[in-house]
Amino acid sequence: MLITMKELLKVASKHHFTIGAFNVTEVSNFKCVFETAEELQAPTIIAVAANELDFCEKEYYQYVREKLMNSQVPYCLHLDHGRSLQDCLRAIQAGFTSVMFDGSHLPYEENAAQTKAIAEIAHCINVSVEGELGTIGNTGNSDEGGADIVYTQPEEVVDYVAKTGVDTLAIAIGTSHGLYPEGFKPVLQLDLLKRIRAVSDIPLVLHGGSGQDDEQVRQASKIGIQKINVASEYKAAYSYELNRIITETKDFKFAITMPKAMAAAKAVVAHKMNVFGCIDKAYLYYENLRRGEEA
Image (cartoon, rainbow, N blue to C red; front, top):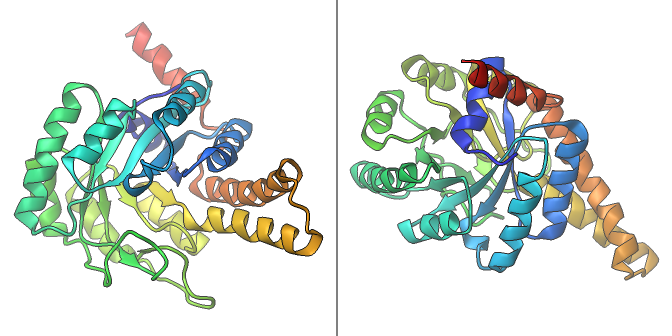
């Protein structure tokens, strides 16, 4: 089942769970996430970063769409960190059901104006839009985020949502993109999250979900985070395990080594889904559809 972000998060909000958005660069990444979601019956967001759109040709996204559409599990196909109207239009033309425009590097009014323009176009063809207010940090090994975290200001949230018409909002409450140095423990500003939630009921998004403390994430979910992005942590598990196997065994038979690396990545994805509370929630979307038909 392939649906929009707005539809996906509406059910999650009603039943108080969070959905993971897992960035997939190529087929093995996609299989790790998709096969885990299928096994665990977990609603999932398949995300592709704008700077990775060129890595795979359009046939790859046709393959991904077909797999999602033919599944009984609800999915959204989402563009992550689009930096221009052109990025968003490319994703829409490829069949994505949600796009993010990241104007966090722009002055506030310009961010709002460009996000609004994209939302107006996307909504005409039933595509959801995510905006970003504040700036997510960067640990030094990611292409996204800023050098410093610029925390989201609650007083700007209401104005930004009203001006742009976005369906979801990515906020900055202490996370960074990429992998944290060993021993470093990031701290989420949960009091700030509570203040943001108090002024707006828009679905809130947490970028930089890799390496976060599980209990802090659970608390953030309870307060109002409905979508959490994950990329570096599960991709690192895959890469490290593949490198270990090849280094130790000198076995370059990828049909043998890659499934083992994928198993390591799947374990991370499954753990995240458990923390987010979205396992075995696919059936809720069919209940929602039945109620809609009865109405």
